[in-house]
Amino acid sequence: MAGITDGSFCRKLASCGFDMVTIGGYNVDKATIAAGHRIIQRGRSEFDVSPDEIINHIDQQIHIIKDDNTWGGMVSVNIRAITPEPVIEISQLDGVDVVEINAHCRQPEIMDLQCGQRLLLEPLHLYELVKEVVKKAGSKVSVKIRANVPGVDEIAVSKAVKNAGADFLHVDAMKPGHQHADYNIITSIKKSTDIFLIGNNSIKDLKSALKIIDAGADGISMARALIGGCVPFDLSLI
Image (cartoon, rainbow, N blue to C red; front, top):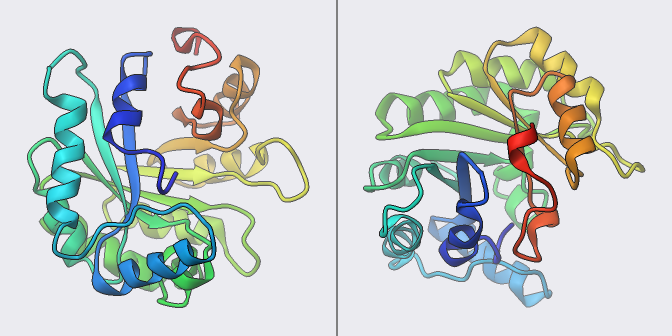
């Protein structure tokens, strides 16, 4: 959650049973950072870090989570970028276990840069971006996508991500007009690819978590349900 999930937020939740926490999304190049400023000006939360400081800032957030060595999980960094280079640079920071390419953000300022959710309309470009990151990354690589975007073939996108060598596919299984995830799209993606699939959307209790696992997800992710700083159910029951 841009502007919210920083090192301090994730540190509080890390010991609640999560195998991985994600900081970001971060805008990490001049174009996306400028877009982030415009998003802030219209009242939406974003991380506001200058191009000169973004790498140091992310490094500091990683240390906030990991420095006392009391939690042995992974830290992922969700990144919006128009080229692979800053993603690769961040992947090589000590303590970064996963870099997550953001093909999910639907803010117009980001999509106008052919970034975020707009990447879903160009599976070949997404493939090339992910492949370049995978080739040079110092960490594992994840890609976060959004389901049910008009004009997008989720299966083609998922196969592109898998074929590019990513370790994780993180799917926001958004179902417009409903207060629950699109479990069918999770099932379809799982049947079409063998990538580790993280299911996301409307997971707020044990029932919704188990439903997305039963649909085919290998793991779950949560966001809005954690705003209060606690997990609303026992993760060990999944």
